[in-house]
Image 1 (tube, rainbow, N blue to C red):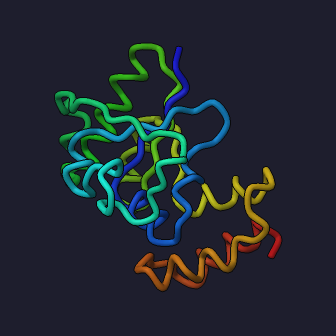
Image 2: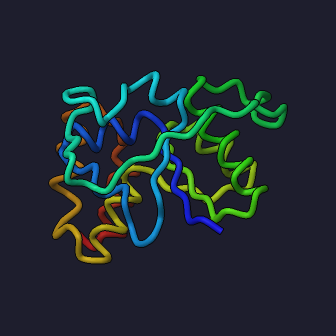
Length: 165
């Protein structure tokens, strides 16, 4: 059984822009990205394709796309989100312990309905603070917002409350 984290484009791009892609790696979880997402963000192993990529980091694996099952199609998500969910369901059915990394509300709701374990970019920040990999969540949230991540005031406050900041 593999421990997998399957990431969508938005968390990859946002964490890259703030030079925090390493936060995707946690414990023994392997980070993989489906081909459909690589088509959106570019292969991070190609210099300059993904902001924040550093060849000294743990690798981000590439996974072949799989057929999208009807239970994922019904949510009418973008191709990357659909493939993240389809791949997660396929790998879960094969016995792997899977977690998806999604930020967009529609994709997150679909993951919940499908019973998938889910984390978003803010959740990765909270975990990183909890295990001592970062000192504070607030400055990284500030930078994420400057880079285009939208957080309404209530959600931001909730995240900072969880971080005890």
